[in-house]
Image 1: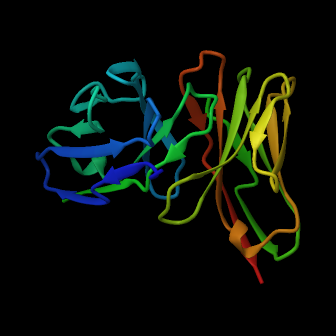
Image 2: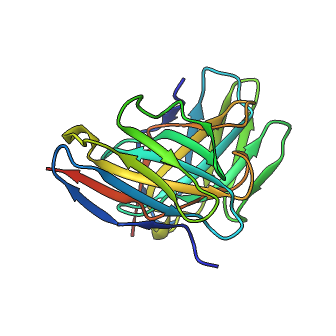
Amino acid sequence: NAGVMQNPRHLVRRRGQEARLRCSPMKGHSHVYWYRQLPEEGLKFMVYLQKENIIDESGMPKERFSAEFPKEGPSILRIQQVVRGDSAAYFCASSPGPVNTEAFFGQGTRLTVV
Amino acid sequence: QQPVQSPQAVILREGEDAVINCSSSKALYSVHWYRQKHGEAPVFLMILLKGGEQKGHEKISASFNEKKQQSSLYLTASQLSYSGTYFCGTGGGNNRKLIWGLGTSLAVNP
């Protein structure tokens, strides 16, 4: 059973471009969480999705950021018109149930905006 | 609302013990503990739920004081592999998301 797969591991974008981050949860997991982490800081919750539904997006910036978890395929975190401040590590985690179950994290995507 | 972890950093010699604390100003339903090594993904250690239920690994122990809204992670007979940053995530009863502390950096030296 493969772990949570995130790709790409590293992504470089110029200001104004779009960034697409992908997360394939563990088999059998229908709950996905996206987090953002800056160097030497903790994890900041962004969004919680459960197959085709956004359950909680209170941590997502109102503009330029969107997330989806389609019936088929990986979860996608999309950042439009990236700015330097978007540079960070983005982690996704999946779990078989709601938040009070063990979550498994992917290796993260390190986004650098130049 | 962000839980406060203490201490911020700990340096141990192999075999020594350490306690990492996580305190919240809000009523807690659950506390989650993860360890992250530099450049890697966080790894699950323990979940403590209101009412006393615990889910975790055999070599890790933790406590959850619901009245004080705090949790402590106990690392005994530390090994080099224990080095990393320990994060606590706290959950309310709404079962939606966790709020994470800033982490405690632990270095275990030979």
